[in-house]
Amino acid sequence: MKLLRVQNEHYVFRLTVWERKLLAVVLNLYPVIPAAHQTLSKFPATTDKTNQKLLDEALAEHRNENKKLVRAFLADGRRFRETDISSWMTLSAAEIEWLLQVLNDIYVGNWILLGSPDEGKWDITPNEENVRHLGAMQLAQNFQGALLDAVSGP
Amino acid sequence: MPEVMPDLERGEESKSKSEKEPGYVVICWNDPVNLMIYVTHVFQVVFGWQKSKAEFHMKQVHNLGKSVLVRESLEKAEHFVHQLQKYSLHATMERDE
Image (cartoon, rainbow over all chains, first blue to last red; front, side):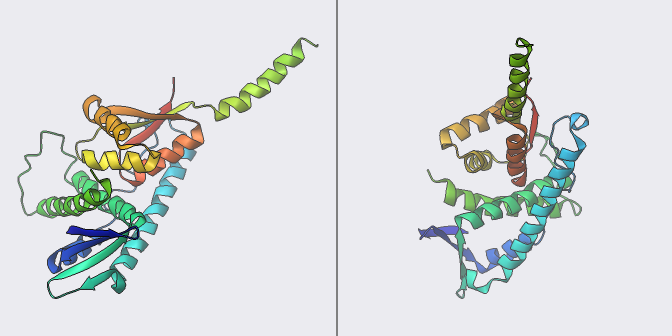
């Protein structure tokens, strides 16, 4: 996936047909991070339970909204211009932001499903059980990298 | 009596003032998974910081294990924690003691 140009505050990317299919498969994994994973405080015992509940509800609402956006995104035929060998995908800056959130949820969520391995302990041997999570992480990271390169600039 | 009145007034003032004062810190904690370029980008978007400031805090997170990002009132601190968690960063708020 490569950035072709930025035009009228919209980013135009070129994807191979293969990449477009992979993007759809990866995005359909969302959400992956367990619902109760985030806490308001590092020390949850000291947190006001009402405030924690409000945060949980806000994040749940946000996940539902993102799920709808993913479905609409993948169903929007105008977003992708197809040729025989590639697709051109147009995104606004706001769309890149929610795509980054979705992709990072998939990336971090699969890391959690792998047991949240610590830094320096990434010598996980791929096997039939974990290859799904390792593959999803790698793919999410690749798409995330392309989006970040486009918006981060020099 | 006259001596008491100013104290009462000051008490009321300080109460409403303390609710608005920055009594909470928003902290981002290190994790071994989020990419440095991603964390920098999120700080820029959520706080509107220049890249250099965002990178400074990202490096604090990476090297020191955490970075205090802002000191805010309860409501604003909750808002920022929610924004950072939407991006799946490990962010919390704690009382500024």
